Image 1 (cartoon, rainbow, N blue to C red):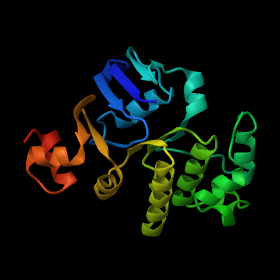
Image 2: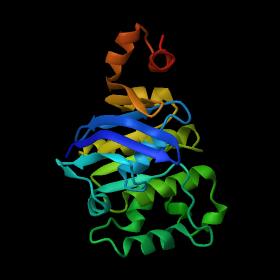
Image 3: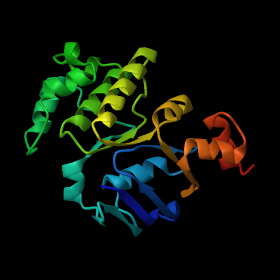
Length: 233
């Protein structure tokens, strides 16, 4: 179930957020999306989950055009700016969201996976930023998706929370799930991702294995290679 993005263009009025962007993500891999602020990373992910329409180009999933129904069936998404309703608790929210799904994991299971069982009956208004991010991941897991699209999944999490989430993602990857991940924390990308794509000015500046990128620029660390790529050094 490869994902193929071909010549994608996305405009916001006259601003071209994505510029003939093409990229292939393989089934079962962990793929990191890197880029400076405003490079087009979030726009790309939102097009991928049908949150944004695009002006030109195409996205294919398993060789067929990606449709809203395919996204609904196979994709789980955690947005960077996830903001759940504050007046209810987590178990109420996940129970409500699971009702229209033909297949879904039990809300309790999802909350246990992200470490929120003890807080499941607390009002979401009392949650920290890190707890809200965990809740967003629980929602993304609710339909047991084949593809997880995660925009800054560890935002607001402390060191222990980050470790717990990446342990969970490693477990999910071992079960064959495709994970597409955007974050500014390079050590996590380097440890977790098999390949990366660098988005720069709405284009793909590089796509490939991390060792290949480091060799290209003659450096030992991903962050240094990334900076050389986007600075054109």
